[in-house]
Image (cartoon, rainbow, N blue to C red; front, side, top):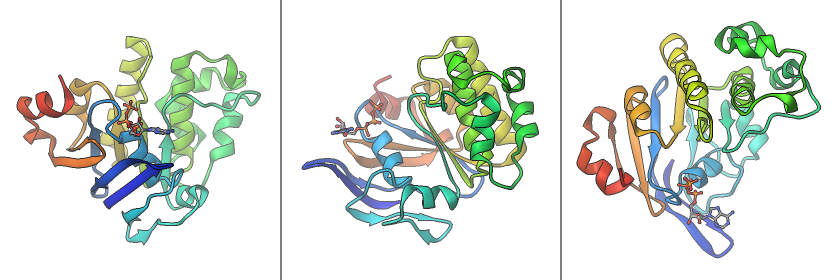
Length: 224
Ligand code: ATP
C-alpha cells in the first residue's frame, strides 16, 4: 500500500498509509487505539474504498476491486470480532470457505485439534476461543497468499490466547505463509513478527525490522 487515504463520510481516517510486505514475511501493524489499523485492513481487503494511493497484491492492482474478488486473489481476513456462521456446523463452516491448495480439513484439524473434536457441533455453540480458531481455520481453508489477523486474541482467556499464538508460530515456521497481524500484545508481536509498521493518526510513521523497534519507539507510538 502506498500513500493510502480513506474517509468515513467526511471524516478522514487514513492520511497516507505505506505498507510493504515480502512473501513469507510476518508484519505487525501497530499503533494505539484509533490510529487506523482496522481501517487500513478494511481498505486493503476492499471492505471499504480508499481515496488516494495504490494497493497491490503480488503486482496486481486491487483498487476498485470488490472484496470477494480480492479474497479470491489471496487475501484471507480474520476480522475484528468473531464471526463464525451460526446454524452451520464447525465442519460446514470450514468447507464453505474451501478452495484448493495446501490447506484442507485435515491440515486445519492438525493445527486446531478442537475443531476436529467439535466437527459436528453448531458453530454458535462454541466457546469464544473455539470460534476464533474456527474463523482462523476458515481463512486458511481459502488458501490465502496473505493471512490478515485483526485482534485475533482480543477478549480471550490467557490459555486460549497462548493456543492461538502457538498456532500462528506453527504457520510461520512450517508453512511460510505471509501474515499481517494486529494485536495489543507487544510481547507476542516482538517474538513473532519480522517487521513492524507503526501508524499514528492514519499515517505510517515508522517501518522497519522488529529487531530495530526500540523502547523509545514503543513509548512514543504505542504508549507502553
Ligand atoms: P482500534 O485498536 O481501536 O481498533 P484502529 O487503529 O484499528 O483502532 P480504526 O478503527 O481504523 O483504528 O479507526 C481509525 C479512525 O477512524 C478513528 O479515528 C476512528 O474513530 C475512525 N472510525 C473507525 N471506524 C469508523 C466508522 N465506522 N465511522 C466513522 N469513523 C470511524
